[in-house]
Image (cartoon, rainbow, N blue to C red; front, side, top):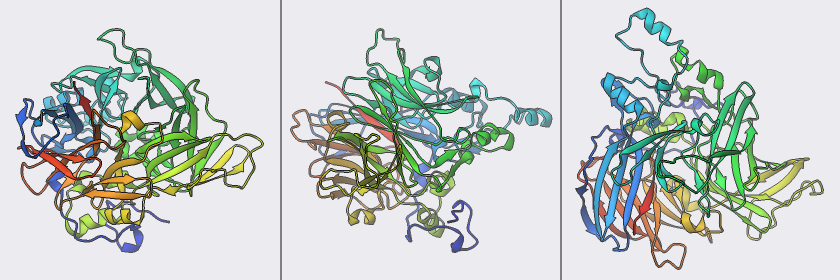
Length: 553
C-alpha cells in the first residue's frame, strides 16, 4: 500500500490513500496566527456562571509565535511557547499570557531570524557570514546553543513544582502565579538521557515516572525514569532522579518515536510503535538542510510491541505483547484487574499524521484543506487486555483474556510472544465526530484504577471541533458543539464534595478563528455535559496543546 506525502499535490487521487471523503471544511488559518502576550492579568467577560467552589489557575501551553523577522516556522510544533493562565476565584476569571523566555526565544528575537532549529524547521545560516563560512556552518557539530529549549507542549509537575516541557532534554521551571520562567533544568545533569516526554505520570505516593531516549555507540535505548516525591530544599529540581530500566530498541539505528506511555498500579507500559526515527538522517540533517521531522517514517511491516516494566524493581517482562501496526500519542488510562493489565488509548492505524500538521496545511482552504484532512487516518479510543499470569505452561492459540464482557483477545503465538487484538471503546456514533483525541480522565482519583468516564475532543477538522464525554459502560457519549468553535483539550476539575467519578467541571479553551478577539474559557458540568459558563477573553489566542489545573485553597 503506497502512502505518499500528502503535502505534495498528487498527480492523481490513486496515488494518495484517503481515509475519509469530507468536503467544504471551513478555513481555520487564524488558529496558527502569531499573537502578542498579555503579561498583566485582564478581566474576562462572563456569561452564565462559574461555580463558586472552583479556585485556582487553569494553565495552558502551546505555540504562539510562528514567524521570526521575515522567516517562518514550518511545523505546528515549532512555534514559540506561549503560556496561558485563567485564574478562577469566586465565580470571576482573569487571563494573562507570557512567552516563555527560553534561550531559543531570546536568540531568535535578538537576531530577528530563526537561529535555533525546531522539529520541522532548520535554522538558517547567519546572512552576515560569507558564503564559505555559511557552508562550513552546515558541518558544525550540534552545540549547547543549537538544541531547542522551546518548551511548548505541556505544563507538568515534579515534586510539587510546575514546569513547562517539550520532548527535548530541557524543561523550564515556572512560577504558576506570574508564568515567568524561574529555572532552566536539563535532564542530563541528573541522568544519562538525551530527551524526555512531556507527559509524565504521577503515582499515588507522589513519585513521578517518565520516559526518555538515550543514544550511544552501544545503541538506542528507551529509559524508564523515576523522580522521587520528596524535595529537601526550595532550590531542588530533579535531584534523586534515576533510570529504573533501559529497554534496547528493536532497531538501534531506527528507534521508535513515542509521545507518552501508560502506567498502572504496578507497571509502566512502553509502546514501541512502527513510527520510527532514522538517527543517521537526524545526525546529517543540518548538512542536508533537513529538519528532524524529515527523519520520521512509518513502517507498517512491523508489529507494535508492548513492553511491561515492574515499577518496584525495573524488571522487564520476559513476554512481549504484540499488536498490529498502530500509532498512539496519548493513552487514556491503564489498570490491573483479575490478572490482566488493561490499557486504554487513542489509536490510529496509520503513522503519517505528523507530516500533515505543517503550518501551511493548517492555513489551507477549499479543496486543498479537504485533501489534507482526508489523507489523515482517524484516531479512535481502543482497549487492549494483556494477561499477566503467563509462563512456560501457558497454552498456545487460545484467548487468554478471561474478563467478562470484553471482546479484546490475547493469544500466545510463540515462546515469549502474545498477540493482542483490541476492543473499541466507542459506538458507531463516534465516527460522525471524526474520532477522538486529547483524552483526559478524573486523573487524581482514577489514574491507574478501574474507571468509567473519559473526555476528549472530536476531530471533524484538523483540530478539535467538539467536546465528548464517553461512558465506557454501554459506550454512550455526550457531546458539546457549536459551529465555528474549536475547543481544546478538556481538563477535569473535581468538585470538593465529589462522591461520584464525574462530579466536577470540564474546562476547555475554545478558539474562534473566524471571530476576532472572542476566544473563551468554557466550563461544562462534567456529569450532564451542559454548559455552565464561559469567560470571553478580549485578545486572540492560538490553538494550544496541553494544560493542567493548579488548585488553590
